[in-house]
Length: 261
Ligand SMILES: *Cc1c(COP(=O)(O)O)cnc(C)c1O
Image (cartoon, rainbow, N blue to C red; front, side, top):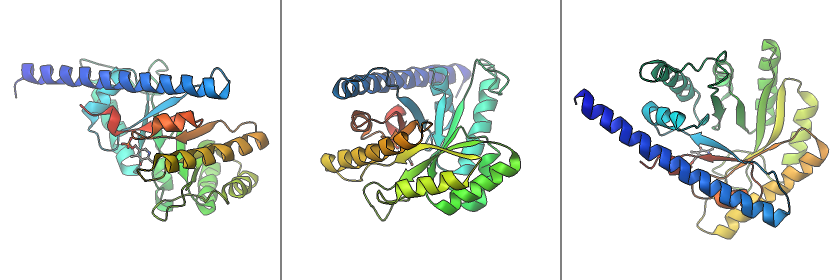
């Protein structure tokens, strides 16, 4: 492929991804307004985490250039590879953007959303993730805290809730979430649990999906009443994020709908 064709294709990709992002942003804003009207509140903010697990780094670059800053990956080795490839690609002409922490005008956030094996903890921490969404056992929380303590760093994280009680999913049951949260908070100093994450029920039955979000929100409210620094409720994906926001989510994780192009 010659250079001109390649540039034309890159621009077409850029345009497609920017318009997908604009559409998702409008849908998030519309759902946020409906939620605020329903709950009688103002100032509710929803953060979009772009889940890039099935995407190549060129698509991620296009999304970055369209203004997206938070990216989510579910495997430690993918996060490591994509973070370094994206940094390299953006550093080259024509972009010449530097993503280093000393360049505060171009911050990028890496969110870890997948199952974390304990033997991958050091690899993950080396990548300085902004938020780990998927704490699914007390043992994992305590191991992470130990490593963070040894490294003298505070790591923000969320407890994963298996809100629809699906055997195929990781996470705490609705019944055990608040006790597990309190247990971990009492025994850790460097893992900072700041909220909950859930994956909506895997079913065509929308009322069951909404129910799983509503139950997770109720737990989140209980925790917030007990811990004033609890602030993140991560729920909603491509197929159900409007429902999740209507139930009070303030962080959504969207993959396929963002990269249709
Ligand atoms: C893949 C994934 C997503 C995004 O899924 P889409 O349906 O592509 O939006 C969100 N959260 C988790 C935990 C995932 O693994």
